[in-house]
Amino acid sequence: MVTSILDIPPELLCHIAGYVTSLQSLKSLASLNHRLYSIFSPLLYRRDAKSERSRAIDWAAKNGDMKILEKALEYGAKLPEPCKFKAKYRMKERQRYGHKIKRYFEYETPHPLCVTAKTGNQSMMEFLLSQGCDPNMRDSENLSVLSIAVVHNHLHLVQVLLAAGAIQFHSHDTRSYNTPQENYPLQVAAHLGNKKIFDLLLAHDPHGMRDATDLWISLKCALRAKNYDLIAPLVKCGVRLNGTFHEDFQTPLSSAVESGDCNLVRLFLDNGADPSFTVLSDWDSYAQPATFVGWEGETALSKAVIRGDEAMVQILLEGSDRITRTRALSLSMDQLDARISNIILARGCAVEFENQDYMRYPYYKNNQGADYDMINPIVRAINSGNMDMVRILVDERGGSINVWYQGLHNSQSSRSEGSALELAIDLGHFGIIQFLREHGAEKAGKSVRWPFLDFMDGLT
Image (cartoon, rainbow, N blue to C red):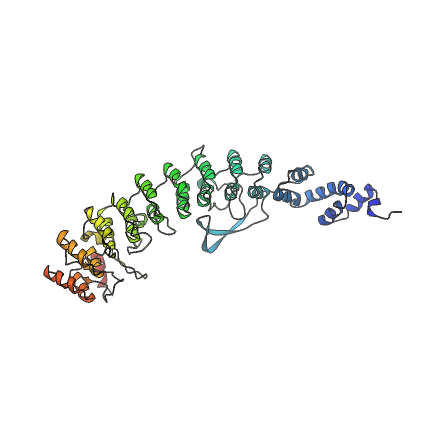
């Protein structure tokens, strides 16, 4: 008489197990003792192998258990195919690892190779690759296996994947996938600041496949994350330094100025960065230029002046063009301390703009209430009530007193355009008014606005 399941013969137990439809029930039976495990375990693996996706393989990958993985394969389980996903576009962009992305994905259970890239099990990674898994597989966030290993700081897996032929370059990574990656291994490493992984990825280009975009995005991410020790290797590899990060209209040099690191600024200048480069240089001829004070596309020198960084100003003056220097001088008039103004003047800076400059950088009204950045230095000196600087600009530097301005919004004056004398009168700076009149200032100045805009003003 059978009084317990333990007394049932193995043959009968196997027959009974054939009617058990739940893998969980078989697992429970196999867990009772060693005898039942030896009977039900093979049945459990065979049943799992017949399922659409092997739970044993997924569990082994998650827990790093090579024995379970090998046993599941022995009983006929198959490694899943790379998952196919559909990209959907978000209405708003989001930041991920220092780079803006637009997509999110509908996806299945992560592939064991992607899971292993997270856990860091080198033996399992090598085994899965030996079984034919694609080293360029993606996960549900559209990250490649290599990028996942970078995210989780697994240097040893990065080495394994590169040796297996993993592609890290954006322009060669779209085979068999419907959408390109938006985060790349080098860029992710630049954002996270892992120098060993970063140096390994940067040095690994056996077939000369890397292009300028990989370096450019990595430079942006390193600057944003303040991982400045990663920038010199990028410069050595020839990353371009005259360009615009269109997400925030910064240039590499202006980003370096904001970092406050003079050595970084010198590094960029020594390797070809143009201190007069602005975002306008990257825009096409039909784009409306934004030429107002405080916008992110200002030159690096303007940013240094606004920050009051004397050392940075001295570095950037070398190589800056005439317009850039005069812009910087004008901005310095807002500072009661004349040290930066004197530094700029000592370099022979022109004290006023030329008429053709306004055609190159025309005035457009903006909703930010910011000043037009082509306002002559003497106008800003008057606006600040800086009598000493007005005298220096006129008597020592030969600046004109009959200049016209427009786009001056940050002022106690009720007017946004007019002549230098009109501004002084409106502000009630009597000493400056007397000085200007003694030097022949006229109340009505002549506009130097772009002729095309004057023509447009007459249209209805």
